[in-house]
Length: 173
Image 1 (cartoon, rainbow, N blue to C red):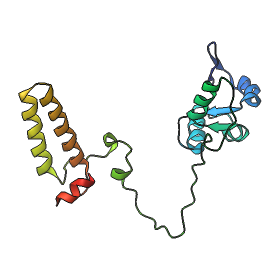
Image 2 (cartoon, rainbow, N blue to C red; image 1 turned 90 degrees about the vertical axis):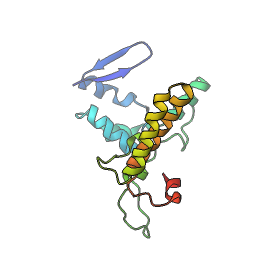
Image 3 (spheres, helix red, strand yellow; image 1 turned 30 degrees about the horizontal axis):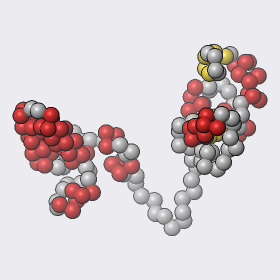
């Protein structure tokens, strides 16, 4: 099983023995992931036979911000704490109660929200879909923008897990 090694000239596929020889040469791992644990998990998937934890422990696991700083300076810059990826193992505060994670609130983007087949806000989403179809039927740049806005609002209401009962609840959506 090989791995991909990118240098300035080209990409090379290395065998396991070549990887073991290069292990001491690895000084930095640059990642766009958020924690070191995510990096280790990702590397274990792509290199199941290598000792990923040992390699990550021997080098700096840094963010893309570090890479950008190096490119701007034209040399390796000193690795600061804000360049290092944090460990993903968090210790929960003692007073914090264990609550279920809400996938609606934890979704980074609205397109990642889980949308049920039968929404509790069907009457509102149906009305917005009707307005969307009407704006789409009228055509024109302004009306197409309105149609898209109605479509997004309808999708947001369909994904909202609670039934809308007041205007105040709509501000949370």
